[in-house]
Image (cartoon, rainbow, N blue to C red; front, side):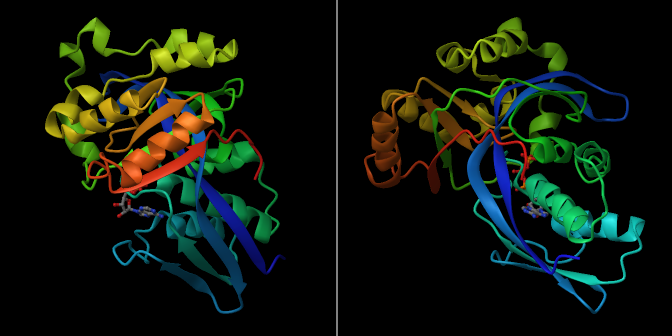
Length: 297
Ligand code: ATP
């Protein structure tokens, strides 16, 4: 048994997000292009002799009980395998919270991976993914990582060729967007053809490694709801375009916006502008990172 594991839980962005329909059970059927980025939360997993799961986080407003997804991930495997030891989980958040970057799902994915390793449970990545979906639709993807097409409610995954490297500027305005609000106000039947991103075209461009084409095809149907409700999201996109982004998009249900930059110097200058320059009032959190394409932990 391993006593301590240091884990990294990487965030994701959506290069494409389309909603096909609302199912009878209330879930939405989606087609998304997922991409892991180099921004990560740190998780320390410690094995203790006394039973139970103890969660500590650096953010006072996050739950440290069974409502935290890391707790749920540890409990799921510990119950199934009758693990008598306890675990301590120290979570240090860097991925913006409730921002459309799947931070919580990625933390859960890392803990599933870590508990499997710590107690030698012998589960394969596929078996971890099967269990992960019980915690959240994005958890299987967060176990898989890299560039992927995600369908169904997000759990039907097809790995794609890794994207060529590029700089990703991430900016989150100081507001929270309820995912529920966005989906409730998305009327899939009323959308126009041009509201839907060309997911098949993007899969094609990714398979060819054509970054410029990918940047030109970025599209998220949820922007039709979120941008009119929160215009600052549109203002951040405009600023990034002005500073030379090849493409910009809102990730998930927002409010995080990202810009893709093919030139590292242009990306660094855009980061400075959003962080300290004329447009520093638009976003509260700004990060410059890149695509993270390693699939193994
Ligand atoms: P998605 O992209 O999947 O919609 P998100 O970025 O919108 O995810 P998260 O950051 O994962 O949202 O968290 C949303 C909510 O889940 C938070 O408001 C928080 O109360 C709760 N939560 C539970 N566990 C975690 C965790 N480990 N990290 C962040 N939030 C968590």
